[in-house]
Amino acid sequence: MASGRMTPRQKMINMMYLVLTALLALNVSKEVLNSFFEVNLGIVKTTNGLDKKNTETYAAFEDATNQEKVKNYKNLANKIKPDALELVNFIQEMKYTLVLTVDNAVFLGEHLDEDGEEIEDNKFEVSYDKLDDIDKNKKIAFLNKKDDRNSSGDAFNPESKAQLPRINGEGKATQLKNHILDYKELLLDVLETAKDSNWVTTNGKLSSLIEEINTTLDIKEGKVYGDKGKKVSWEHYNFHDMPSVGALTLLSKWQADVKNMELAVISFLASNVNESFLKFSGAEATTIPSSNFILKNEEFRSTIFLTAFDKSSTPEIFIGDYEVDENGDPVLGENGRPIWNGDKELVPVVNGKGDYSVKGNRVGPQTYKGLIKILQDDGNQYYPFEGEYLVADKSFAVSATQMNVLYANDIENPIQVSVAGYQPEDIKVSFSGGALTSVNRKKGEYIIKPSQANVGKEVNVSLSVKQKDEKRYKPIGKSVFRVKNVPGQTIGARYADGTYDKNKVKANTFSSKIKDFDFPIKFSVSEFTVVCIGTKRVETKVKGYKVSEAAKLEISKLSKGQTVLFKDFVVRQKGVPTYLDRPKDKFELIIE
Figure (tube, one colour):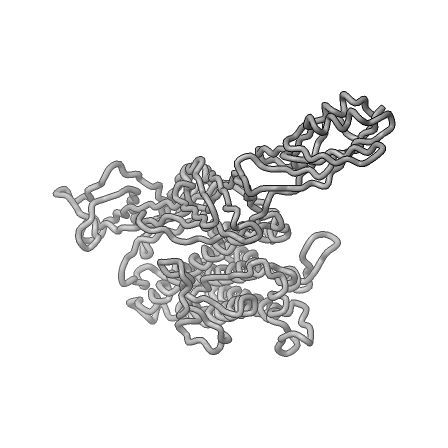
């Protein structure tokens, strides 16, 4: 990635891109792929916030008192608007097509209802061009086959192969690259026009903005990507052999980049209009977090400011809970000040903007709220704001996908559950295939004992998480396990194959264990057969784990060089009467 000055928001988006690309190069578990779909939804939410701020800035140009004075800036801004919308919609079509190719259906808006059931009305199986404009603008709510590594290449044709979809000889991946490059040139041309026309000040802000555009929308023609010795094109690097959740998240990142750069340029144009010419119709408190998702012990940062603010006046920004009336507005006391519920925190303000930071010490969803105080013609006014972010533990998971096994036979199978962003005690675990016992709910530790009737079948461990209202649980997903009997036994003998005197042969005892099996369960030999081979062959059935008196009598009749054979062992498990194993072990002892 190219270096350069970037906003905190852009740094966070790029950091998620780097982490995603690195992890997707590994054979990551299903849980990690699920987490990245949540990252994708977070980026989509950020993009929607950017789009709202863009809409407000365009409206500010339209609401300006003196349209003659602002028309040059407005005309430049309006050059960007249609191209940005076209590029975002182009990427949205790619995302929809990818999910439709992978799952044969796309859930738009929401995937599950309050009962955890799929919302069939939100399920679409038609091509993107058959959707109406409202549905086209809804978020993609679900991706089932997140590890599908073929569909992004088939749908976007990164090598522009003739047998795959393409237009004018170019696959979708190449078309996307060209759209991004054209959009970057448009933004740079707008700024160049404003500079040459002396409509903007040529200070460090303009240079920084140009550098940020070149960094954020960086795709160099002819440049190769990937590790040394494995250089490939940008299209191949981003879409060939890429898990579907990776391709989807990267496309969402580009949507956020497009909207972010649109906001940066039109906000820069607006800031260069004389404040007496650009009059906003109202004021709104705004909070922009660097990220809504942080790891435990990392620092959460958020910029808080009024959407329309005067640099000549410095607002006071407070974090804290306050009394509100029936309309949700702050209640002011007799002194004209808000009534606070507890302590409040004053946020540092620089150039009209507050910079709020707090360390994430508690895992789970966190909220903050407060008021912005600003002096206006009719006295002090207070504008409320609120925000939320998610704190998660630093964690990773490595799952052996072919060993998702639970053992029956009354074995205690320990499991540990976790859901990113939620405390373990806020997770509900369900298991219908046997017994489930909580060991330490605060650590997410449980014991599962599958019923013997489920041997050879698949069972589910389902997770739900407590919602903010603390009254309902939302289904998160389930893990499938196979139920098996314990592996076969191995018989151990006090005296194994070899030559021994009769006393040792008679004193032989037998035990049973499962090799390399770590569960603390007890097995015992319940019966076996003693075969004495002398002048004739005599078989004696024995109950228990040691030689019976009847068998000892037969052994006593043998002479030197004759044979005693121990075989047909039967093993049982203590406390599980239905368990029985017949190992094939045999021991041949010669009388010395």
